[in-house]
Amino acid sequence: MTETKTIQPMGPLEASIRPPGSKSITNRALICAALASGTSTLRHALDSDDTRVMIAALRQLGIPVAAQKQTERVSVDGCGGRVPASEGDLQVGNSGTTMRFLTSLLATAEGRYCLDGVPRMRQRPIRDLVHAIRQLGGTLRCTHENDCPPVEIDAHGLAG
Image 1 (spheres, rainbow, N blue to C red):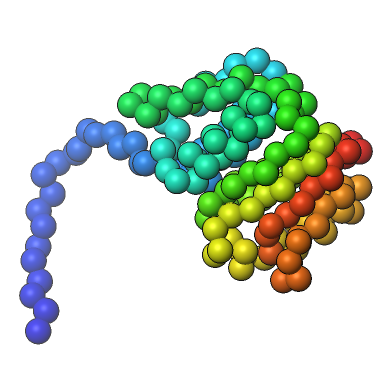
Image 2 (image 1 turned 90 degrees about the vertical axis):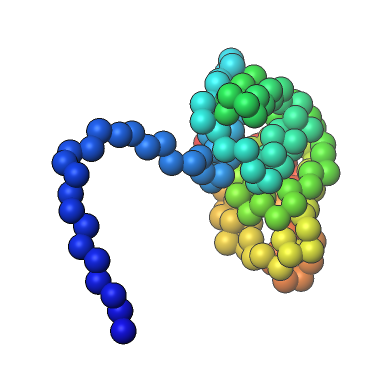
């Protein structure tokens, strides 16, 4: 038997709520800031495994990123659309957003890159993105037969 309780309204409430940050939105903002010219400051950036992996990868690509966990701020010195590193073996852990966003970013670069992750990442399909980038003139491939990472990118920029 379910017990029912009645709640009496107390009157109007005045409050504000800030939901926790989103790893997906934070990673999108990191990519945009990395591609921009100048310094971008992200406020209320989520500190998570996915965002830490993205920040580490951007740093490995030569894009300076300063993360201040206590203030939830991240500063990114953008590369103006030109990735500084012309090669890199990047580990993305289990971050699907990092895998997909970096695959797209690096297809626009000039150089040779490999993106890989944990064993579970090697079971996550990325075929649709790989085919879409190929249609734009990109040269990349999944190194395993299952259309999942690792992804090797031989980047020569993309038209448009």
